[in-house]
Length: 441
Image (tube, rainbow, N blue to C red; front, side, top):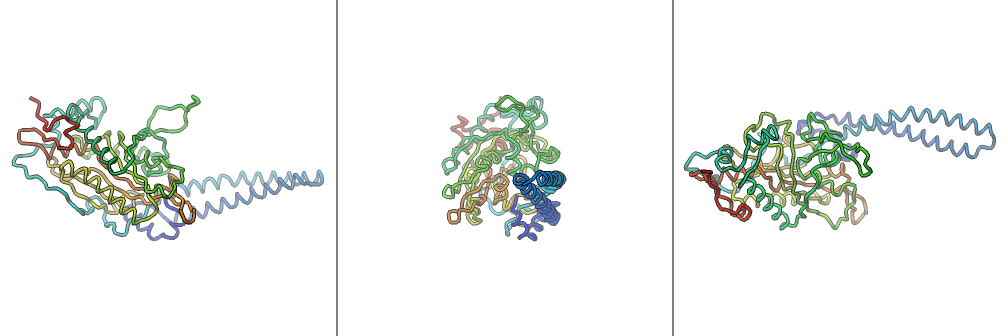
């Protein structure tokens, strides 16, 4: 969410951002709603001020007649207030709903484009291996090595369900432990945040498309069963499962004003992740590439409102992810996300991909996004300017350090041998307890 004055001052940039991100947003409708909201609020405030004045008039009335006249006038004003309140409430709700749709502007050097096909490769690391044999995909390798069970996963969990078994489980946990240790060594505070959350962290981080959860478009699981508050009464708050640690980490300081000298603050969150993938039906229907549940180590940084520093921090975050993947020995590339493939709140974004020879293509392993203050305004996370004392929304950045499943695919497919074995990356051997995975006899 952006500041309304910023939107007024940068109308044309907002219009270009909405068009570039392929969003159906009418900024002039927002301005009209803003005018209606202000007028309705002013009319209500004037009537309430008049009522307050009458209360004083009633208290100081010198006769019964004056008091009766003031009371009668007060009743009329009360009726007027009651008639004005619905309009004030409706115009504010309309304004708030439109404000929730306002896209963040995009960085000036963001590539133009319509979809992910227009994203731009900006760097590569590592060589793509030339196989002297026909490489298998991760599905065949996982079956022969006993690393996961898709059939029983579907039986128990439904579509896209899976079990990681034996060395597959050890590899996944090794990936998570290695990534979290790496993040801690880089100065990021390790955290295990909640994965069952209220709605406000998801709205605040932009995982709700509007003000409230919409099961038709939001790729979030809502928990159907009710909950109880501390006093035993039935809770009226809905709960949701997060798709990444990002919302929980960002909401950690919600409603707070942070001392400026504490910034930037770096967090690394390990969590289970749940995604409904409602927008991806028919894509990657086989194997582990697109699943509903996985583990992840996520990076989050809260920074001062300094665009140059934010660029430096985003580069730092990407560099750590690429270091992790290079340590694993994977060939990777960095992709600059074009405007047409960028989410509503994003200012600048990159993806990191790994080559997956069994699948015969690059596969996304994670993304790094700078939201500037778009999320912070929703979550009310600010810092006090050391010179003026003014409270300023922080900049919020996030990045995938590592997930548990797609890197597993890349490892299996890149490090397979002609005898069906898979070489375990050296950095994972302490976690797995072996240097090679052998096919089941």
